[in-house]
Image (cartoon, rainbow, N blue to C red; front, side, top):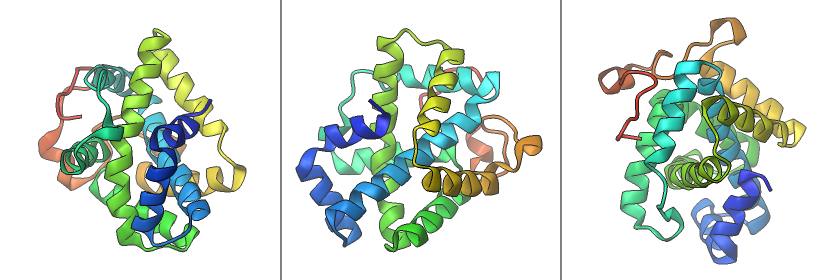
Length: 200
């Protein structure tokens, strides 16, 4: 089961209906947007985890998301947590770029996708944390698992996300690790890569 499948199971039909309402669209489109959003978040994590320091920092951050239930949490606190996660994974400008690209692809409003992404990010983190603990993953196996998640995406979506993520992280030769790629609003929030970060 992919993280997207687990996300849909956690949301249930009522959660999917709420997402559709937020996006002002039908359930099928909402499902596709959810797959794209979760794929973008996982893709950003995978790009960071290509570097040992980034993988270690992410693995440490997952420990802070054990025993949480974002599917039944307060929306305001969920959004705050999600903005912090997105800031680490994609950066502020990167999150906006991803939202705009996914909105164009799905034919929904960019603002709605921007509101959805910080709600989904803690759910993805929680699911990934449970998987990492249950399978006793270290940083290396976590990075491999994120790569497999990317490979499970439909080809058209995978190509779209690759292009969007390249726009944030640069091409293969230009990629840097967690907290290192250039986004001005992240500068003051950097932590030592490889250490657990309570702001995740």
